[in-house]
Image 1: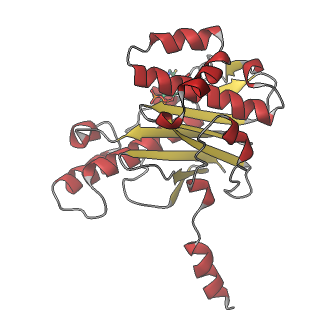
Image 2: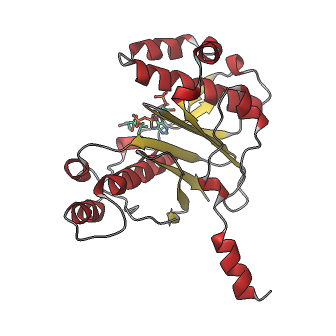
Length: 253
Ligand SMILES: CC(C)(COP(=O)(O)OP(=O)(O)OC[C@H]1O[C@@H](n2cnc3c(N)ncnc32)[C@H](O)[C@@H]1OP(=O)(O)O)[C@@H](O)C(=O)NCCC(=O)NCCS
């Protein structure tokens, strides 16, 4: 086989990092092997449809949460937001606990220092663990990832008014979304383009640990259907999610 043929074939293979494990029960998080990809970095990505977690299952997950998580969960007025929060935190406890051989209810959460101000509200961390992880929850979907390098994930529902929100993004991204809305740019509807750019930006800012403490106008991550993108040593990959959502993963290379 010629070198160019083999290169074409490897480009045709799906990027495993972009396809999350989709567990249906908490136990199935641990039975499916996590995908490992991105330049030799150990990585696991799990996407949970919150509707598939049955009440008995969720009750088990809830029993793992600490007092602060229960308080935060009860602060959500909308049931779908509370449910997504509880599933995200139970899932994170399960995968982080498994990585450090600790039962999910024994994981003790903390936060890394924020790179903006040094206060402990940066990326989440687990006491005694040298693994990095990130979680995101939105009505209907939860995304959790774990790696041996810093990372960030974000899952978002498509907005009703992508053009109205596009001004929050980098000016070139705003222009691309407006052009798509006016029919002068092919390659994705305005709402899909907005969700791509926003989830890439949030994943990147969560990976950095500063979150929206860094102005989302500053970083261009694009609205096009790029399979992957790099920015300042970070690898950005779109995660395959159901219609109506967008999601991204940022991993420090
Ligand atoms: C991080 C942030 C972007 C999350 O936004 P979101 O879309 O509402 O929520 P998501 O579901 O995608 O992610 C939430 C998770 O992100 C994580 N997270 C929170 N702050 C984070 C940070 N600075 N870096 C990385 N991850 C962070 C937490 O695990 C959080 O989970 P929890 O709220 O259930 O405990 C947003 O909360 C934020 O920017 N916070 C910091 C704002 C700020 O100004 N900080 C001051 C800097 S000096």
